[in-house]
Amino acid sequence: DVKVTQSSRYLVKRTGEKVFLECVQDMDHENMFWYRQDPGLGLRLIYFSYDVKMKEKGDIPEGYSVSREKKERFSLILESASTNQTSMYLCASSFGDRGTDTQYFGPGTRLTVL
Amino acid sequence: GIQVEQSPPDLILQEGANSTLRCNFSDSVNNLQWFHQNPWGQLINLFYIPSGTKQNGRLSATTVATERYSLLYISSSQTTDSGVYFCAVEPAGGYNKLIFGAGTRLAVHP
Image 1 (cartoon, chains in turn green, blue):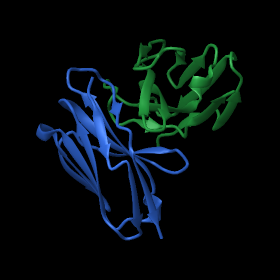
Image 2 (cartoon, helix red, strand yellow):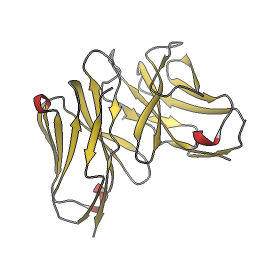
Image 3 (cartoon, chains in turn green, red):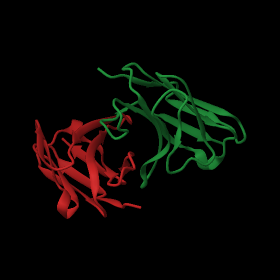
Image 4 (cartoon, chains in turn green, orange):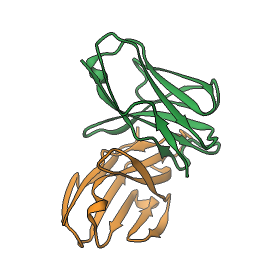
């Protein structure tokens, strides 16, 4: 079974803090993704990566950055957290040269910024 | 950009009932996927269905790409079917990323 894990299920941070969300997949997938989920908006793509050290902006990259130093690990960084970044963050991975092949999701991190 | 609309936004069923969830999209797509998010937040891929019909147990899905819609059928619903169902599409033209609808929240009561 594909396993995608995320570093925390729940996280509470203060405005201005630097926040790291980590995602690890164990199936040697090329593609990894970070989404945020907000009520009534579905999932929106923040950043994705097709290979180590490669990243591409999704639909809502502002206020976020990412890092992919190893194939299995994809980190989402909030340089200076703000209250409007309170959300559920979901990581996903997929195999193959198409980012839209079947995506496997982690359990999510619910981030609250106070 | 492409719009993905799901209906109904909320659905309440008694256990054993059948239901149909709909996904409309505003432009041509390369593929379409259905996902289920359980009450604990875990998202699972149900179907990869750019066109045609697929079945998996009590669930089936049909996509009519020329008319820009997809349907997810749930038969003999169970309480474990509760959660949010998302439709996601990849727009034609090589964007190579998924656009999600807002979801249908389903509650199945015993």
